[in-house]
Amino acid sequence: MAESKYSKSIKKLEEIIERIENEEIDVDELSDKVKEAVTLIKDCKSKIEKAEFEVKKVVEDFDIEEKE
Amino acid sequence: MSQDVLKVSELNQFIKDVINSGFPQAIWVCGEIQGYDRNKDRTHVFFELVEKDPNSKDIVARIGLVIFANRKFQIESVLRRSENAFALKDDIEVKFACKVDFYAPHGAVRLIVEDIDPTYTLGKIAQEKQRLITLLKEKGVLDKNKELKLPTVALNIGLITAYDSAAYNDFISELQKSGIGFKIYLRDSLMQGKKAEADIVKAIDKLNRVSALDVIVITRGGGSISDLSCFDSQLIAERIAASNFPVLSGIGHEINTTITDLAAHTYAKTPTAIAQFLVGSVQNFLNTLNEQGSKIVELAENMIDRERQRLKDAAVNLQNTTRHFLKEHNEQIIRIEEVIRHKPENILAKERSLLTNSQEILKKVIKTRLQNDQCKLESYRKIIDIVHPANTMKRGFSITRNSQGKVVKVVKDVRAKEQLTTELMDGVVRSEVK
Image 1: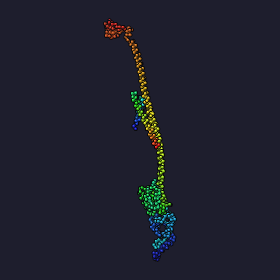
Image 2: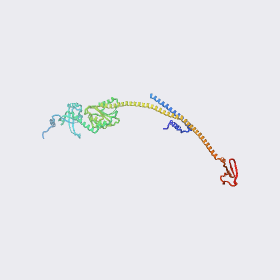
Image 3: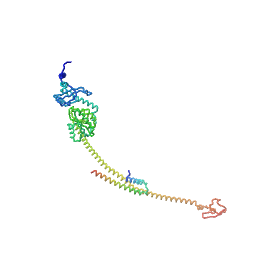
Image 4: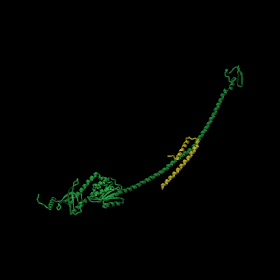
């Protein structure tokens, strides 16, 4: 199965984090990488929020159908 | 030999007298009836009794009989008293009480029937039937049709009976009363008498060629044992055994079961009863169908309830799992966020402190180095001070050079008359070698 975009983002984030945590990163690229990470985090967060919202909505729809 | 000549009438009278005195009273005679059927409606019934060879069935002896009108009624009432078990007809074995008579005008011996012993005939019929049953049983003929499976819903009925007979009407009306859609394929057949057997056999064969059939029914109403004797038939039993369809028989008789009944898949006593059997089996099926229908509905409802509950559970589960899933991802993101928020600062701070350290070290190193250099310089200066020629000269040493300016170290370095220059602490002295 092709990796979803979210999974790709997380993978990339984890790579960056690993390099930062292990302090393998060069100061030269640090700010670029942090910028990239922040963008990815924002993306992922909004995806999770969206998913949460939609799941809630779908389940609510389901409940309504049940009652009908 | 007597020389007397007799007229025929005289002779016949003489014979008659001899016979009358030879058979002073009635005697019992047994044999098989022949030629009765065609004469039975006459006032006086003339017919024959024959004796057959038990193996070849050839007639080995015969004699004429007569039942006079005055005896006919009595004999019939005897037969009626024995439950109408049989009527006089051709081919049956009977035992008559007869007077042996010589009918002079015809010159013929004949028996005048006076009485009948029906038990003899009944015994014979029963005996013959039993023999046949044993034989057919041994050949497996009686069980063959029972091996066929009666269709659960037998609606297409091949009916062998006499059209518009009481049996036919009883059977049909019982079926119609049920309101079930039976379909009748009628084979109008003779159901008694000599020709009945062949007719029934033909009907079974014909109906076996109707592929739409579910079952064949042979039925007729009640009658005397001899009426029904055509159903004690080996041929019919064998055809039933060979039939592709189950054969049901409803041959009306309270006491006896015919061989046709025994060979049939199922038998009942009357046309109505066999019709009821068919109706009953369809009704049974319908009842079972209804029960099963209700059961299916109940099972389906249970299943639907169960599945609805399962869906509900799954929905709750889905919600929980999704929440959990998203929560985990959220936590992951938060953790990442934390790292991104703080770690780069740490890194930079660390780098900064590393730089500061380096700077300090550098400073220290430079300082040390400078101090070292100074020390070295000092020691060099001291050494130089020690080895400096001025200081040596101070202690009285001087440096003498030859005319080429070369320092004179040994005598050999100078020649006579050579001008030398000697450096002293405070000036130069020129001299000449002697």
